[in-house]
Length: 142
Image 1: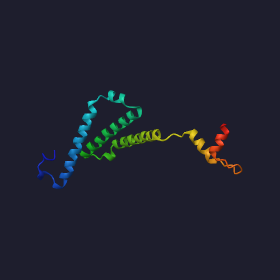
Image 2: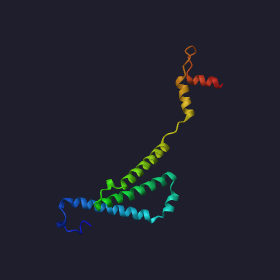
Image 3: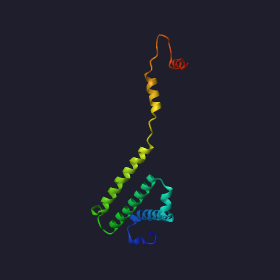
Image 4: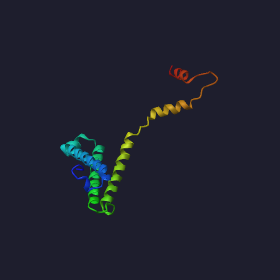
């Protein structure tokens, strides 16, 4: 794209920006082709519900972001267009999904281990007979 345009038609300062933009467009095109090569129903069957929600949100966000760029190229201020509210709404749901994923990853409390830890931390040795916790347990078990 950038190579096809004569260098005299645009300022040379933006050549690097145009080259980067072209590479980005090519990358987006390749990702879309990959994503479109698999049917949506096949893709969703392979994913867990949380992953399905992430896929839907990313797809919606990407589509709305591309529309944002389209509006900007048409000279329309996207900040004053309803697409801005839609992007904010999607971001809100993305944050909710992230919170759910974080809660899912959070470690669970092992109540048995916690009670043993507290019980052993509160144990006081009997100074009269010099018992240690290990000796006291053996004696109780016998």
